[in-house]
Image (cartoon, rainbow, N blue to C red):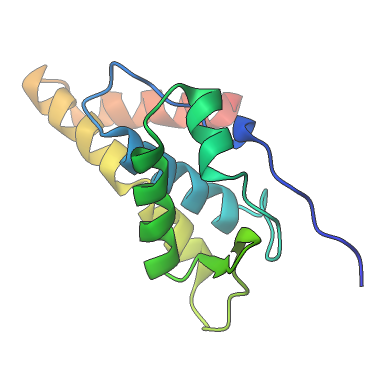
Length: 134
């Protein structure tokens, strides 16, 4: 059995000026990385203390994010050893789950497009161009 990676604090990119709370940013980023295959089952999460220090946030913020991910079944607590990424035992449509993670961002884009009175076709064309460049 191969040893899984110990993840670093760099897995999180926090936007401090965002209206989205820091713990929620962490939760959503980790969900995307797990569902997107960048982070794998068995990978060891950095400690709460390391993440808090590396990001310059309160340890309770990190603890809250980890607890939410644990309650969602994405992380598992190992007593005395920290958190690891959980094995996924349930069957679900991963593509649909990954797509659903985009919903909040797309809803914000939709609202902004409505506020700016932009034509749907123009917004969709811009999104298509952005996706083709990515």
